[in-house]
Length: 267
Length: 267
Image 1 (cartoon, rainbow over the protein chains, first blue to last red):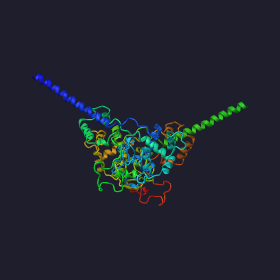
Image 2 (cartoon, each protein chain N blue to C red):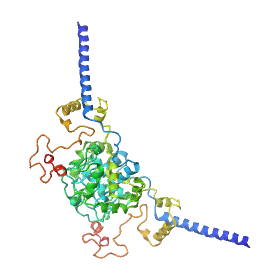
Image 3 (spheres, each protein chain N blue to C red):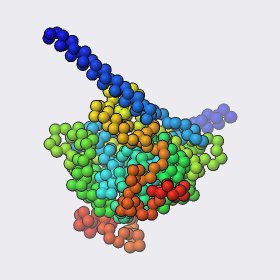
Image 4 (cartoon, rainbow over the protein chains, first blue to last red):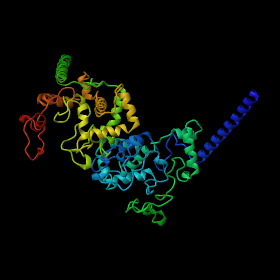
């Protein structure tokens, strides 16, 4: 009798175990359909082949406050690589201690976004990089001023030549943006625990996290927050389920409406 | 006759050559008495033994804007390591876009200075590091606020524990300053061409530079700008030969007088 019971209990345990494993496999399969792990290497960039010289130049430019009119503010000021690619502020502090209108987005994995800026007004990082340099509330400079500054620094002239070989006038605002894009495209965070899970290592996230993942999939979060970057694949108004009231919405900010002039794109 | 002349010319050339070499040796000997090359490794710090954990923690703190009340300004803002350890501004931009009263000194090789700040009011880099964090015109924070911020970040708590093992309360303002000092002590620029010259490589600087060195020694520049760091070994009023007029001197700045209350120490 005792022996029979013990066989039965082993059999039941195996059944439960198989059920759990099957559920785990099903969860992984669902996750793999909804998300893609962050790649180890940057994707090819339109009209901007990656070279070590260009990436290194872009890195110098990214950290150089001399692209701002005050020489205080660099790309890294608002997109601080030591702080998750952001400044951890509600809205950034810019030229003359002005407050910017929107929260600064992270530059980490940003190369995988459908477009750049919250309203998608720049189609890629190269176009994006030109914005803050010129914005009066951010770096407050001009293309002419930025190029003049860069041309006054012999090491930059040399590095632009090497990053853009064969060009008659390599130190240009366009090439500055190209180099910054090239560097930013390398700012990837592959091999997180969730990435490893997606690659098939089912032990990479724990049971609680798996329950969270299941909720995330079941409740529909994944409808917007999916793909390679857990989001950044479409445009959505602020407050997807319910539009917030005037007490929450910034008064003068129409969101993507400014780009598309389409009523449904209002913030 | 032709043969005799050629021997004579060889002999004269040798004489000139020996003369030049002797002059070169003399110049090198004078330079070696006046200057010392920048060492490859940091000097021992008073009451602050260097460890890799402490240096790495100090590096994180050095670049962390969260030590300022705005979360915008880090040590690196005014002492930018990519710009020679300074901000390249006449006077720095601080909290609320205020202008600081004095030019920010470089942090490179600063560990060899007799004391810190232009007026020497901090005896070492550890004491110096506490100043800007609290200065209303700079980072505008307080020791309490800085420590509260650091204690709220688990990775910092962990790193302070490792950098200051065995201490009951390792996350302190003092230890923050110690870690920053440890990192800053590693910011050395050894093996410059001038350093290599001082070490005996007489070809490391060219003939024009040697003429400049000779002038520097003969005209008395070396009286203040000598030692391991080409200066930083004493206190000197602004305008050593002739005190500038009120149009040049900053109106409310008494210089080292504020520290010593000695009339001859006025800016």
